[in-house]
Image 1 (cartoon, rainbow, N blue to C red):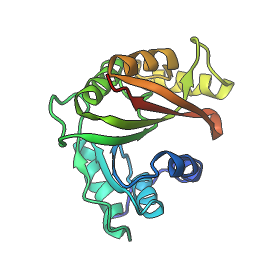
Image 2 (image 1 turned 90 degrees about the vertical axis):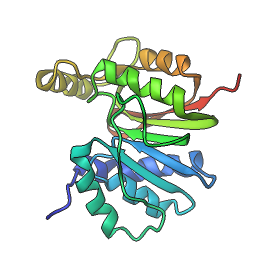
Image 3 (image 1 turned 135 degrees about the vertical axis):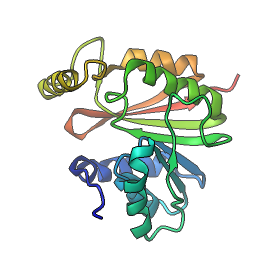
Amino acid sequence: MNKPFSQSCENNKQPILQRLQTIFHSPQTVWEIGSGTGQHGCFFAESLPHLIWQTTDREENICGINRWIEESESAKLPKSLTLNVTDQDWPCQAIDALFTANTLHIMHSHEVESLFTGLEKYLTDTATVCIYGPFNYHGDYTSASNAQFDQWLKARDPESGIRDFEVIENLASKAGLLISNDFEMPSNNRLLVFSKTVI
């Protein structure tokens, strides 16, 4: 059976890696939410060998992700785990680092809220969270292509759509996270980096 494939993952993996090299510089386990095809997980695990990269996704995507993992040369890429952000219990004890790409605009609003509820529960006091994808600022699109993309998303699923940065920052704040970087990325995307606040 062929592995699933995403061209957008191939297009954005190198620019994302350049940022992750400086963000996830210490040995640790990075939990990836919504690993999709598994391409990102394999590439980052192979490119950042000091990390253990734990992919996760909904049950229906796990087999495809594991096909990528089975062909990977990384020794620090365990089998993918089933994780739905709306589940009360996630398959972990604690999370030191988290990455997710192109997920928030696919999720429904209540699922985005559930994601941050889970982060509040599982993140350690020194945790770092990286969120990649398109975002609106002050209710405005950052490009015409993002506006068209948002229309396509809502036609496909009215509960999906590009999220407002301010909404995400507010949810993060309630989960004890502060924005530490907001990197401009290719194709009108951003990489938001949040750090866990220590009270």
